[in-house]
Image 1 (tube, rainbow, N blue to C red):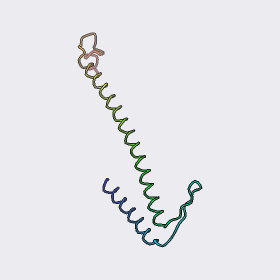
Image 2 (image 1 turned 45 degrees about the vertical axis):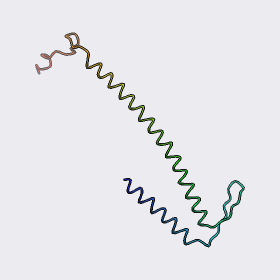
Image 3 (image 1 turned 30 degrees about the horizontal axis):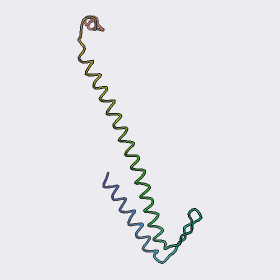
Image 4 (image 1 turned 120 degrees about the vertical axis):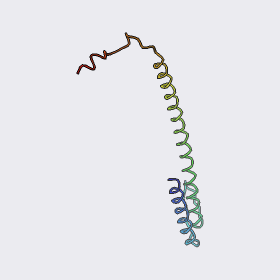
Length: 108
């Protein structure tokens, strides 16, 4: 699966690079919060792509931290359940603990 992701990333990067190289003479203006910036189209494309990658990285980092927190909680629950299971296994079995009679179960 990781190979497919890297392959798709390379394809996207090559597509952006190819588009930018075909439009080296074009200029573009960007209006952002009443600030106008004029530059070459390939520069606008690269900056947009870089900001998109940065945004993706930040979102991914938060998602990884969230998943690690969930894993820690699940490990804690598993540890508590394992402790409870071990304590139940160590209880003595006596006649009063039997919930059924073997003779009644086998008479069918």
